[in-house]
Length: 197
Image (cartoon, rainbow, N blue to C red):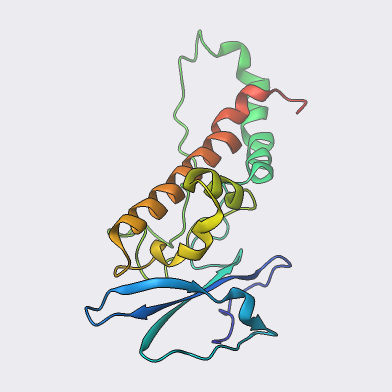
């Protein structure tokens, strides 16, 4: 196993999430992924590698990825609540009586759901080594969008250019739907819930 990615900070909930391996076929495409996560013991993968060429995907969950680590996590209810309590609620308390009459609307230029350091063209799902946005609620949301928990054995499809096209499309669509719905639940719809919740 390669060492865990080095970061500036180490958090209590950083952990190895999945280890997958795919046989590289003669065409260069990847065969079906094998989930080897349960075969990792004390940071070492013990596996008799079958003949042929194999590609490995090692997926870590961390708060210190290559993206913008100092931004709000729109996929997390507590993170969104902090922003709302610190910014939106004080504005509403001061200017609420003007909403809908004097103030017809407002532009919310919130930080984006970022997983990369900048705004570079081509930062689409599928780029090797790209960190992807995540939260505690993503596992349940991903399972809901994918239809079952088998997505965990196909995580390579979020980065692979050589995996099965149909599976890649299903995985990336399920991922983006899960992200979009969590942003809606944790941030967009949060405003209608009231102060006491």
